Length: 250
Image (cartoon, rainbow, N blue to C red):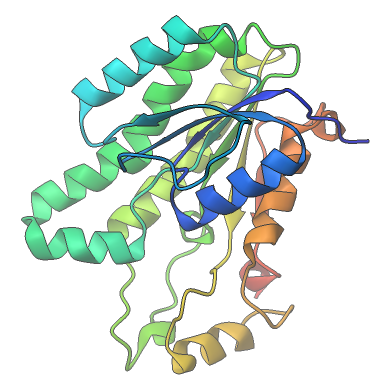
C-alpha cells in the first residue's frame, strides 16, 4: 500500500529529536534523503542520505547558498518536510541572550519566513515529481490559546512567538495548497505535547486534559508524515492533521 522506495525527501531540522526519528524511520522505507540543520554534520549516517547541508535558518545568506546548492545538485524532490523551528526550550535560551525584539525576529525568521522561502525556492524541483508533497510541521499551539494553568509552579513558559509562527504555518499551508494544486499537495501536521522530561506536575495536568491519557510519541507524528508522503493521501491537500490524542477537543 505504501511504496516510497527511492523517493527523494528533503528534510529540515534533521538533527532535532523529531528530525532524527523521521530520518531513521524513513530509511527503513528505502527513501533517499537530503538533510539540513545548523550543526556541522548529520547525526545519522546511511547510504540513503544523499547529502547533508549545514545551514543557519536565521541567516538569509546561508539559506540562499543552500537553495543554490540544492538546485544545482538535484534534479527533483518528491517530498519536502519543513520541520526546522525554534522550540520552547530554544526560545527560552534565545530570550536570555537576545533583546526582546531580536528574539522575536529570530523566531519569525526561522519558524515562518524560512518555511515560506524553502517552499518557493524548491517549487521547481517539486514540480518534476509525479507525487510531489509538502508537509509542514505546526503545533496544537498554532490552534489553541495556552492553558496557563498547566505551567503553574513550574519553570516552563509558553511563548507568543512560537504560537504565532505555528498558527501562521497552518494558514501558509492552506494558501500554498490553493496555489500549487493540482501538481503539488501541501498539508500540515499539528502534534500535541511530546514528553521531553517535563515536570511531573505539568505532565499530570496535561494527561488530565488528554482523552488518550498519554503525551504524543514521535511515532504518532511519523505515521501522519508517512501517510501524507504516500499515495494514500493523493486527494488530500490544504489540511491540518491534528495528532494530539484528543487534547484539542476538550
